[in-house]
Image (cartoon, rainbow, N blue to C red; front, side):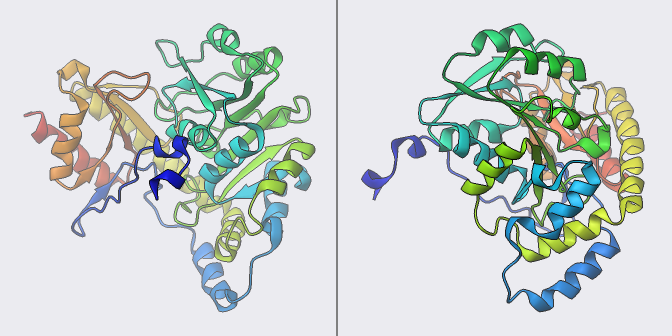
Amino acid sequence: MDYLVNEHIKSIGQKEPRRAKGSDVIRLDKGELPYPPSPHVVEAITDAVKTINRYPEILGGKLREALAKYTGAKEQQIFIGNGSDDLIELIAKVFVKPGEEVIIPVPTFFVYFLSTQVVNGNPILVHRTADFGLDVEAIVQKVTPKTKVLFIANPNNPTANLIPREIVQEILERVECVVVVDECYYEICQETVADLVDRYPNLIILRSLSKSFGLAGLRVGYGIGNETVVDYLYRAAQMFAVNKLAIVGAIAALEDMEYVHSNIQQICQDREYLARELENLGFFVCPSATNFLLVHTKPLNIPSKDLVQALQARNIFVQDFGLKPGLDAYYFRTSVGSPIENQALLTQLKEVINL
């Protein structure tokens, strides 16, 4: 069958299942909220189960209306998908032809690169500054007539830093390609450029209900953009891009913002504690505007790969970012877990580094 597969698909790495063993595993490797969704969400989904023999509404139905109300955007400016990963690939599918270019400032979210590969586009990697900011001049210099999309994660993943609004706006003024600003940690950092979509028709905002709302398992992502752009994106999207339980759960989550804000407050408080304790162990911790921390292990001269493997042996999972594009061999990322999970991480790290 190999000869029937497109060559550019063959070059994409295989996905492998990762199953943690045991009930005592601590997962801090996916950027998930450590707390369950609102009871209101559980109740709404439980009730909706009775009707899953019917298809969900096209275009997200009432969820689109709820998101417009939540964001202050027009309903026609909202598009919804199966998580923001799905929307990233949809954007690549709509705007990027084989051989055309996508600019990706690194280090950043790997799905931008993967989605470009899937459509046989050409990923153009631009290194960030020493503090992981955007090198505006380097980005602008990379723009060519073949450049179709520029992805900016803000705050960035995995570096956790926030790019100032004026930098994003400067880029919008200087490039004509589609600029995607991925704001999936918006509820945590409370910084956005979504209000600029009317001014810049090439601007697309992406957001997620996975992180702050605790709906990672439902896979709900949404975007805000120019009405014409949203129309084209929906033309290329699946007819039922979001399942019925996800729609119902997302609407219910948006109706219980008090619960969301309470969890965020706890996460931010625990983030500062965890960062201080990691620094006390000798690590360098990058400033974070998210629910995770990027940790540099170089001060202890321990490659992150070795540290991550040692933690996995103790059933604690963090994400190794050593030698990822734009990073050296000494970085791992950990989510901010519950207080119990954070303490377990710190205790095991002390043992690993022999403190």
